[in-house]
Length: 333
Image (cartoon, rainbow, N blue to C red):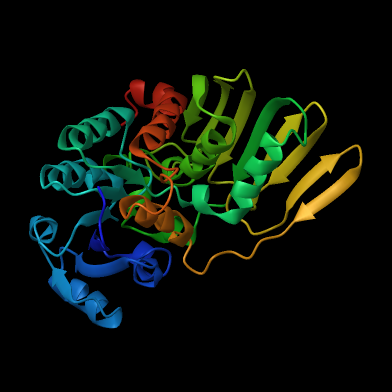
């Protein structure tokens, strides 16, 4: 495809689109946000008016078939990602879908097939692949700064939010029928995807998931080990009912290590025999913007391909499925 201008339509203009993604579509050269959709028309209208978007809809099919829209951004919960992706592909329009890509790997495969059959690209909103801090980590690894990479460890835990503890109506992120699983699918997916970006695909996984606190039915703790195709080992622990926030990843090599967080803005730390070096980065105002810029450049023929595709997004979903399968195969839900 070679568009003169990338003209976006958003399905699901909720919170994630207010700052993280939506405004970026208007700020990138050869890119424009032309239509938005929410099931509640008044909310779609309100978003359109506040963000100066020409059109709004309360019907997804109508937005997809709008002739002024040539790419669809799906920003709904994962439970409807497959449906809207297939619908957009059948209309001949590329898709940029929120993460996690779908509720499970099987749905991801259906989405990939639909887009392949229609001859349209499929991108996934693992936006960290476009951000300077993670590109720097990749450069450090590829320049052999820490020698041969041996293993990676990830530890991420946090307290249960008041929204979950006190709410009678649980957020969709802990409803597996909408999210695919619990908060691990929403948050852990970012870490697993960036490890795929930095270290390559994972080929083997063993994991355990449980519900320890009983605040909802989905898993609230996940632990696992994985083996990358390159031979690198990995270990990860995620807990969503702990006493404080911790977010740390360490990539260990034969000559040093790199320490960084997935969600924080603390410096990336390089430790070798020479000492410690820190690399600091200003977070982008709109976190999706660097990745969206790669999509626009690809579709307008002025840049290389976007680094986050349906193929890479599906790999992360497969790893998550493997890590939690003991929990769901036991008929917990």
